[in-house]
Image (cartoon, rainbow, N blue to C red; front, side, top):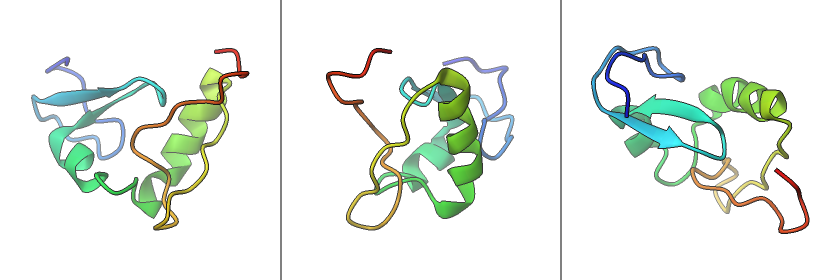
Length: 79
């Protein structure tokens, strides 16, 4: 957690940050909690850009049609 870094999704300057390694983002506690069942649709452009920048696959959507908060790429995909 880095208290001086703004949330990648909402740009809030809050102190508590959650590292989301597969998306390679730092998000605030509120955004983290709101994504418990998947990232909100409004966050998708930022998530897609982060995945593209890292050369990562876009994960399958969950049962709610949302991108999962945690994601493990296929075993045959080299990071």
